[in-house]
Each structure stands twice: as structure tokens, then as C-alpha cells.
Amino acid sequence: MITVAEAKKILDKQAQQMLSFLPKTGRILPLTEVVGRITAEPISAPISVPLFDNSAMDGFAVRSADVKTASPDCPVILKIDGEARAGDSLKELGEPQTTIRIMTGAPLPLNADAVVMKEEAVEKNGGVLLSRPVAAGKNVRRKGEDFNAGDEAIPVGTKITPGVAGLMASLGIRNVPVKPKPRVSVIATGCELVSCLEALKPGKILESNSVFLKAALSEIGISPVRNAVIEDDPALIRERLVAAFEDCHQVASDVIIITGGVSVGDHDHTRSVLEGLGVTQLFWKVAQKPGKPFYVGTLDKKGEKGEKLIFGLPGNPYAVFVCFYLYIHPILLTLMGHPHPEPRRERLKLSRGIAKNDGRSHFLKGKTVQKNNETLAWPLKGQGSHLLGALTKTDILICVPAETREIKEGEEVEVVYLP
Ligand code: AMP
Ligand code: MG
Image (cartoon, rainbow, N blue to C red):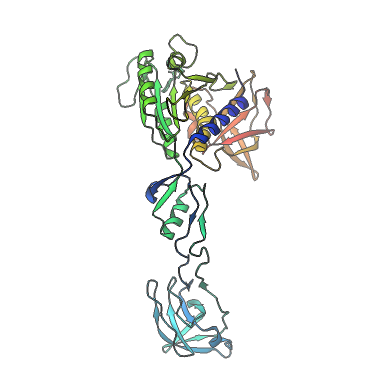
């Protein structure tokens, strides 16, 4: 049995090795398909943003020199000479002492150098009364304020958030080079499992692991290439694994997640089937709760560069949850080139004391709560690894170190934030 830290270290090394096999160049995908992906190259701005000087306010475009002397006692009157709306082409301010009515986003007329807010102007008989001077550049959005054409706008390795997708659209970037993402297969095993669409029978339970995994993968933009629920039958398990291995792809990192049957029960066949298929065990059993029988193995890609990575998770649903977020989620993000693959960790005070009597690291369902302007970690009720009820509240995993037996209320503990 290895420690959580040792398991993490082995997986980190494995991830780096798999990354080194991946092609360095990205795939070009349409903008509509890249949210959540990572840019594979630096992207420069094809146009300046803003594209032209324009008004930041609804108001009046003026020459600041024309209103230099304006004061409440001696206001300046400018004649309104036309209108510039957003979307209009460039206008020109004519005679001195004239102004153009302007809307937010309209190109700043030639000869104008400032905009007076509508709220600061008094309209009268086709003219506008200004009782204060305005500084040149006031309420003007300058061309190239964010980027000049040719500037690097989006560095390589940027996560394409919805905001970054909006930025790309504003620059006219329609096709985006993104880093490759892993191909993932999910296999749930267990004779007791019934998918939620089928009728329950005596002794059977509703299958949830593959549903959870599919949902958690979809949050990082991965849709499993295969998704199967099968019985504890070595031949069936073998058949599904062979199919998953065959689906593997030359230019992708391949990950297979199989749940159930990885412990020492008489009908736990996963490990022996994997061994029979030539999978090399990286580790089996981690000193943690839940998820002690966690298994990881690798398989060479025949005749190709790289390796397939196989996660064997114990079947208990909360063990699957913990193993996924602690180990699999970070490694998938790493393989996708994500700049920050590890979850956020923090030390928080416990809102109530906890105790344990073994030498394993425990990962408790927890919730952050606010008390006297401080964030505390609240260990939830219903910690059993077969129970998911507390997940309606869970936003953190409370990490109780292996060697710790007790943490009192008010003492600090490390927590991992869930995505
Ligand atoms: P195992 O690791 O196969 O011994 O399973 C441990 C526990 O998890 C058993 O109580 C199983 O019924 C349960 N379990 C296994 N697979 C699933 C699944 N896909 N969905 C829900 N529960 C499961
Ligand atoms: Mg089982």
C-alpha cells in the first residue's frame, strides 16, 4: 500500500511522460467548439481593438478648445450639427463652435477630441449649453487601447473560458489552434448494476458511477468514446477493455476508467483481466479512505508512441468521486495542457471536531460555511463511501492526514475545493 503523496507523484510522472509523446502542434477547431480547451499557439490580434476612436458616452462630440472658457456664469453655446450613431461611418466636425450629437460606440468625428456627457449638457434652440471645460480625450475610447493589429492577444497555454471566446470573437478569430485532449473510455462493472432506464429487480441497485463520470468529464469538455455497464464476467470485461484499447488513437493520450471489481472479492476480476491483457500495474491500493483499492496501470501502444493509462476504481460511488477529483481530473487537465491542473487547496478551521482510528488519509465530504467573517470547513453527515446524499451540499473535500487521529473544532485542516 502506498501513500496518497506517493500515488500523486507516480501519476504526475506518468502524465509528464504521456505529454512528451503528444504532438506539439495543435488542432484547428471552430470557435464554437473550443470553450474549455487550451490554446496551442500564441494568437495575435488580426485587428486593433478598439478598431477606431469612438465615444464612451451618449453626449456631444466637441473640440475641447471650443469650450475652454466655459463656466456656470458664462456657458459656451455650441450649434448642434448632425448626429453620429453607433454603426455610422466617420463624420467630420465642421465650423468652430459646432458639435455633433454622438451615441456610445459611434466613431469620434474628425476634428473632435472629446465627448461631453449628455447629462452635463443643456439643449436649447438647436444648440447645447456647456458650463464646464472638457479635457481633450475625455470620454473617448482610443483605437488600439487593448490591442494594436499584430500584438500578441492570447498567449499559448491559455484556457479558453467563455470570456476568452468572447475576446476571440471580438478579434474576428474564427478558427483556433487548441491542444489535443485525451480520449477517455468509461466501463462500469458489477452484476448488481441496473441502468436507471431499466427496471429494478431484487438485489439489484441503480448504476451511478458511469453517469457521474460522464457528467464530470463533460464539465471539462470530454465526451467518452465508449461508455459501458457490464457484469462481473471476466470474458465480458476483457471484451470491453480490448474494444476500448482498440479505440485508442495515435495522436491522443488514451485513458480508460473502469469502476468496480478492483478489490479482493471472489468476483473482482478487473485486475486479473488487465494483467492478462499485458497492462503493467503502476500501483494498487492507496492508504486512503475512501478508495483504498485504487488501481492504476499502463499499456504500451503497439507500434505507436505513447501509452494508454488505465484507472481501476473501487465501485463505491463516493470512492469514485474522490479518486476522480483527486487523481483523474488533474491528470486529464494536465494532458489537455491546462496551465493549472491541480485543484485549489486551502487551510481552513473545522466547524466541528472529527476523529478517526486508522492510519489512512481520509477525504470527507465537506462544506464551506461563513462564521464571523471567516470561512470554516464543515464535515457533513453521511460520510459512508456508498452514500451520495451529502453531495447536494459538498463543495470541498476535507483532507485528514494519515497520521492524524483527531482534529478539534477550530483547528486547521487542509481542504480541496471541488471544481
Ligand atoms: P466493488 O468495488 O465492485 O466491490 O463495489 C463496491 C460497492 O460499490 C458495491 O456495493 C457495489 O454495489 C457498488 N457499486 C459498484 N459499481 C457501482 C456503480 N457503477 N454504481 C453504483 N454503485 C456501484
Ligand atoms: Mg463488484
